[in-house]
Amino acid sequence: MSERDVRDALEATGVAVRAAGDEDEVAGVRPSWVALPESAEEIAAVMRVCAAHDLAAVATGGGTKLHWSAPPRRCDVLVDLCCLNRVVEHAAGDLVVRAQAGVTVEALARTLAEEGQELALDVPVPGSTVGGLLATGIAGPRRFRHGTARDLLIGVTVVLADGTIARSGGKVVKNVAGYDLGKLFTGSYGTLGIIADATFRLHPLPAARAWVTATVERPVTVTVEPYVYEGKTLETTSTDVAASLRAVIPAITESPLEPSAVEVDWPDVDGPCTVAVLVEGAAAAERAKTLCGLMGETAEVTEEPPPWWGRLPEPLLPDRPPAGAGSTGDGEILLEVRNIPYRLAGGFVGPFEAAREAGVRAAVRGSLAAQVLHVALPPGTEPGRVAAFTSRLRDHMETDGEGRVVVLAVPPETGRRLDRWGHIGALRLMHRVKERFDPDRRLSPGRFPGGI
Image (cartoon, rainbow, N blue to C red; front, side):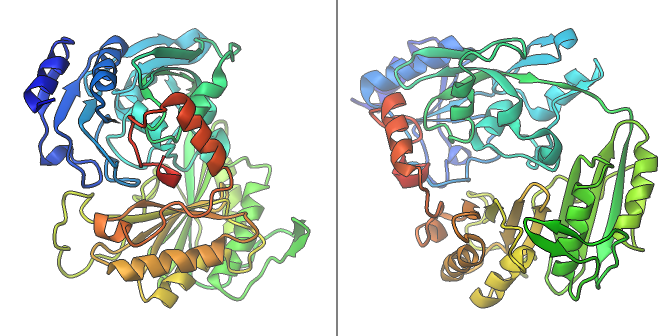
């Protein structure tokens, strides 16, 4: 079938279609066409054309994470959801909102704030959409208190590979029928279906917020008695920064002061580490002052977050930009470490130990409280060194199946040199789920573990 025939078939659906350009590349793979549907029904019409003509489709919203994950094995049609940008319903009395997939998280926040409510998520990539938030499963600092988008999702509308529109869940929190379908699609990178809209449980905007920030440059004394955590006694003093953090952070998270987030920022192992704690709600300022006693003499209370709060780590930049930067997130090299084993004596410095062994420099940011860290390497880092770093980081962090290291973003040449996902025990089950939802492998083929 000729390209003209394909375009004619797509345009016959009534959906706007244009030729793809360089800015539409998906992890370095350029599609032929971009379709811009305005409803779930129009997405379904596009997918029926794809099914009829064996076309592979990839969905996008804000385009902020198109360079994440593995490149698709095929990408004929990019389904751009930017026109699905309405907040369909906001039932303020029920603390529920339904928004289309192309609504940006910032726009949704402004709409909800008018009613004194919020979706209690901090998205670390500006410009992310509701669909992108769910497809990648990304979350920010307050995942420690409120969970991720997967936890706040109560309903979803998706379009399957054959054009079937499926709906799961409902408009009220107590209606959980089909809720597992929403969980299944969250974090699937569009390999099971295209999310058209989502319904979330909301929270009231807190009456007040306060941040406590402290710089950890030397051993600190924690003003609590030693206590047992996972069978081990944690001391209140230590001999290095990492050990200090291992004492401070559990003391904060297990205190009755109920912090909403506990974040760390360590841009270079040779420099200081910053710890920032968010407290929300009644008497936030007073609780924050009490937290200062747990965080050492450098702690201070502010009404505004530190400038790095809720953002991905910023690597030390080379003297000049890498060749070819621009098509894949300006050469972004980003990894995520999940389920960090607390019992590791050097658990937090694992990325730095791996970086030393591989001869690279790492910047680390994230939450030991929620057991999620992000690690960034400088753009232009030699592919072999990135692969060596990833392997050594897994050696440090993936202990007894607890920790997990995922490569979120690397340039295409680097991606060919490493395993992005590592060992996944449920891979056989994931293949069966893919076979059930997309037997012809038409949706984002190859973007998920095991070539799913």
